[in-house]
Image 1 (tube, protein in one colour):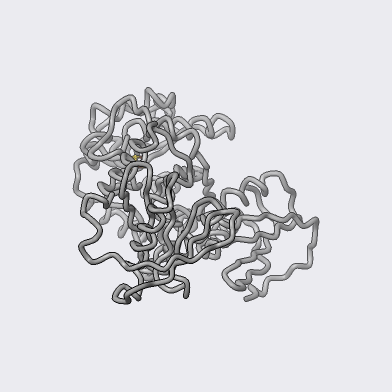
Image 2 (spheres, chains in turn red, cyan):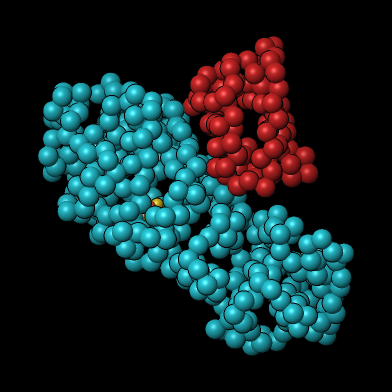
Amino acid sequence: MSTGASDEMVGPVHILDARRLLCPMPVIRLQQLVATLTPGELVDMVCSDPGALHDVPAWCRVHGHVVLETAEVAGEITIRVRVDGTA
Amino acid sequence: MLAAKLMLDQGIEVEGLNFFTGFCVEGHTHAIRDRDRARPRRNNALWVAERLGIKLHIVDVVDAYKQVVLNPRHGYGKHLNPCLDCKSFMVGRAYEWLCEHEFDFIVTGEVVGQRPKSQRRATLPVVARESGAGDRLLRPLCAHHLEPTLPEREGWVDRDRLLAFHGRSRKPQIALAEELGLDEYAQPAGGCCFLTNEHYAAKLRDLWAHRGQRDYELDDIMLLKVGRHIRPRPGFKLVVGREDGENRFLQGYRRQFTSLQVSDGRGPLALVDGVVTDDDLTLAARVVARFGPWREAPRVPIEVAVPGQPARVLEVEPLAADGIPGEWYV
Ligand code: SF4
């Protein structure tokens, strides 16, 4: 599934492996990583808890970051986030 | 939620803090169980923050929280819930956060008399004192029953617009939520964590008793949320998935624990906790066969996987319905 958001601004891509972590740990890990990044940088998350599909976009919305894309293949969820706001 | 909304309505900048202790009921709990699929699959704290339009910081306190659970200065509530120590701990962490991020005061949704132990008139000052927050801790929902705090005295907050809720009834909160347009009111009526749950507390006590020490890791307390826990003897426990969601969750632990499942992959997945003999594994296989779809078959092939070793198959007779004594259930 694509969120249809634009990803014109492309900065460095950081990989965040949050597999086997249950919510809210994927969000906590993302929050910790984003705190070290600057606007425009990207995070590619991989998660196994389907709750991440709800929690990560919600966390991004309240902090002003952008979810560029989400996908779910064989129980593995990938989420691409562009850092825009603050952690 | 209501306390934050009252502050926002006074034009005060608010950010939310949500502490993850490992014992929280929502979120992953709903993710695990198929039977909870109908519930909204959301993190309530994030949902509230979004409704209010505020930032929310989720803080991992799993390690630091251990001392609260293991050695509560004020003891436990009905089960293993150390509510008074827990509140002091969380407000204390909020106070540290406030100092680091240059905020001025802390707001909680506590109400005098709402909870029998941790929200009595006598205990609210304990939280303020032991957390270190002192009179930078404001409870807007019941402020009129308490002495004015620093934000009220300094005029940062208009005390006249704070409230005088008290007692166990949640009706005033629900009415206020409606008045404020917060139609879906996300406030738990019971405890906010598994430590208030009788069955969970029994499993945690059992874990401590059989480990010979009061301690835990995050994986331990997560596993206690899932499955049937069956202890045939000291030092040997089985965690048996009750449905597909739990089985999927338990799959994630197969690299750490010996696991058993019917060879065709149908029925429950079980993890073995403890140091076990071949006889124990045979018994475990018979238990797994009992809870699987082939319980009436004379023999059932059960795959046993020990981490780091090739899986092997045990052909066993499923235990009879009365083959698992009641006292084995933790
Ligand atoms: S029920 Fe709430 S206050 Fe009590 S121990 Fe659990 S999280 Fe803390």
